[in-house]
Length: 268
Image (cartoon, rainbow, N blue to C red; front, side):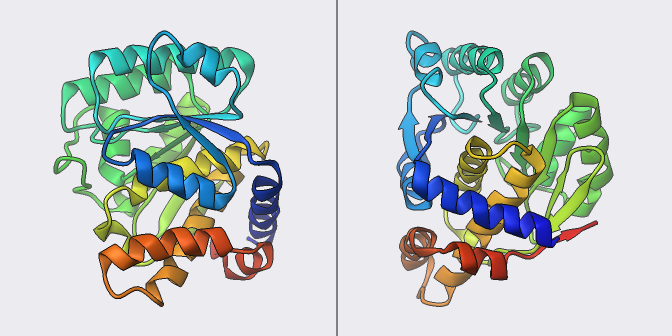
């Protein structure tokens, strides 16, 4: 959809001009990579998960990104406190329910944040989204056991019920707010080979949400931007290690015009 591509390109320019603070409560595995991805996109990252400071920190931020990757009870409490404060202040919240369906702690924590507090966007793989909707699906650790199309209609209904936008990432991403459904075809098969690309994609969505008013546009635009950077990186990478570096470089150098021309966002 040309209008969503234009909005994505405009948001990228806003990001690079404004440098919004993105508060991440994320996992140990991806903290460094996620921070560097956000910096390359033009945002200013902060990783803060101490219960005693999350409310104060999120008050300074333009978006809050919650990632369940390396979860503990204290981190859940911190996420809930930060999310409640962000919700009160009208700050967009993006949730990555990593491994939902694999353990009860992950599934229950994701459902508490999504259902009782409310978020702007939920970004996950198909199995994670199915687990939030039904509680009856499982994952292979943090990896999906289902394809995007299996979860599409469930995601649409869940988005409608929760009043949120859901982004399911896969070979072709699906984004829905319950009324609209769009697909994002940007990306490269090398991306799942590097740990943290899914988590980083969630953070980029948070950055786009920080400079826009439409969560669906932020999710689609963020995924198109990150996916296009992946395509550019794959063209010069020799393997996963060089790809990770090239991905950050490509994101840093991506221009508004390149995203406008390269974003593959379609309705349906």
